Length: 404
Image: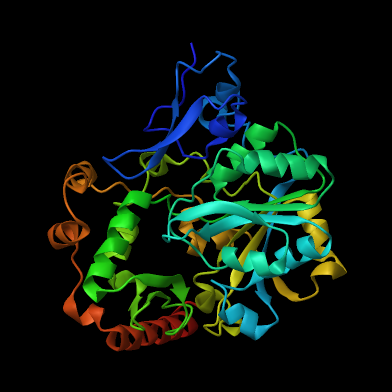
């Protein structure tokens, strides 16, 4: 009997969809929560079982998804930045993705990443030039749509000896590997630290809410605008009318649902990939807390941590090919200390089930009115920015004088 992972376990990696050679699995959006799920069209299915053999959830064991053949016994951790300050300021954190992409493209390769579509939903695509790679820059806190041919295209490029960089969340990287069934020497994978895949349907409702508020269509979205600095990054939305909405992230209504973990997929509350060991070659994220332990590295322009998980990733980082990356090796235990999302799943809100009962029948404005609790003083960007600067200064003083 052919049976896919349950909705509570499915990560939405869509490896099963890509593995089906006859197109018997479609992707459907659940109106009750706004997430995408694979569904078997039974009248087309030939019972080959390829979908089950490519599903990371069904294949998962403690040993299956942890290490590749050339994985390091334990990862190496680096603080890293792009030495080009302008490139760093337009990136989410330290600008490392752009350097890795440039290396791949300059060697005739292909880069896969997440981009906004025409309605500002998020989907995976690939690029063969740096102009195309620009679409993948900056974080997008929405689960990206993996179409039925994304992994297939990656396979074709690898088989044709093209160098490939594939970026995504940990579950997407594992979905890619279970689809490919092997590693390739010309394939580099990069997973991004993730606090949970969030509902595309909830995001769509939010965008409609913003457009109605401004009475104008949206023309651009940036989840990681650095107007107020890297530490206090903002959600910035620009409209065709010329108006702009900018709010330091904790103080926006959609961000409330994201940060309080209402927006996450059910499987994210017990994520199977929360571990220091990752199957990807590189793991990338913001180096939060660096100002406490390494204040000399902090300039509020963005700093990445790079976790090296495989020998070929280490060889590439150590090569002259990436000489535009400045790195400092950091004890690996620093990663868990300040970036707990690498080992801890988000906590499920007690009223999450009730929230999605309301989601199916309420507008975003109604959901916001019922659930969102943001103090008025925090909605003032300048006031919140001043508060955060003071908090950082006090933390520095405390660690300097009392934690030496």
